[in-house]
Image (cartoon, rainbow, N blue to C red; front, side):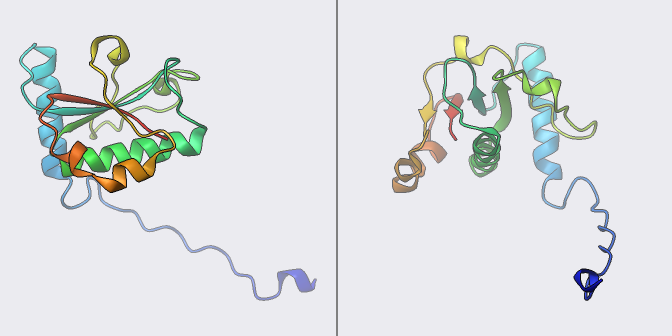
Length: 146
């Protein structure tokens, strides 16, 4: 049939070593932060992406965009990164951290953390002054974004 003309099979995807170059130091710092947090000795700064019944997170694409943006902000501001996503179901029911990756799971941050940055449908506010987030001196930033 003419519809198959010019098509070819997909080439296998090359395997990328984990962790990627440049991420190892972050992963080690994150794991150490989690260990200190479990002992009640956490002193490092953190950023928590939040999606709960109390916040608007958008659809799955919006949430992934917010999570990835939050992770980049955490990297740029040298903060440990966590996700507290309980809506529509706890994210940890469908995604698990990699064995050799950071454990990003956090629960209950909406109740115990102070108000954070809310960039829902307001990317212009962040773009106008990204230093507001990057230079924040707060120990923990709670980010709601879509």
